Length: 310
Image (cartoon, rainbow, N blue to C red):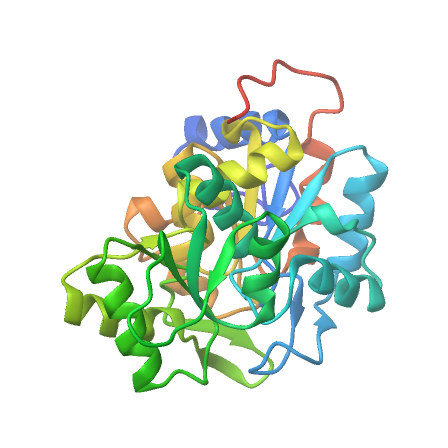
């Protein structure tokens, strides 16, 4: 059944029995932090991720969470800006968040690269992807000739050329690990669905080298664990809010977090009901403003958090 919009479980719950609805209520009460997608969830912008405008209810919901003492971060798979620049852009349109509450694939890539001992990376992307790596002491290798690098990292890169492809392939042939910021085909924009670049570029590199990319952005556990560390909250006590079942909902399901879908991005509400379990949201709201009906269900008392990823 679908839960009554007026109850504390959700505007629309992906639950079929009373027991499942009660379980969702319990899950909400256990939430200690939120991970929000950006495009199609909190804001919409153009195809180059500029001209950001808050979606209805986004400013109010995030302010309410802050007032309740519930931490939240925003995680976008976009790499056109540095995390600090994204945070500034969101503050400019009314969101109250510090720089360290804004995450991109560059953020999780830095965490992962340092853990793996990667000290150099050939980056197919702009300064939004390169600068966080530089700040972490990771050498940026230019895509020229037959370069050597520990990693090849692909992000938003519409300037991609055959020379870039050749250099990246030679780096992978030489032992570099191939990483993608996002394997999503589309992202939400004010003009409708916009085509990403990471997946297309990685497909070419993989086709030539036979090497499969590893994702450092959403929906990877690498990304979610990075967010969990920033929040100081165990993954099972996180709520992940987004518009893409292949990204936010898949990430939530794989980590044992609560997945909350919004229908203001790339999919309408009826799409979510047809999805396989591993991509299906636990709850669906028409827009992020619909979370206001859920906030009273959140536990205002400390609970056992569980281990936070290190």
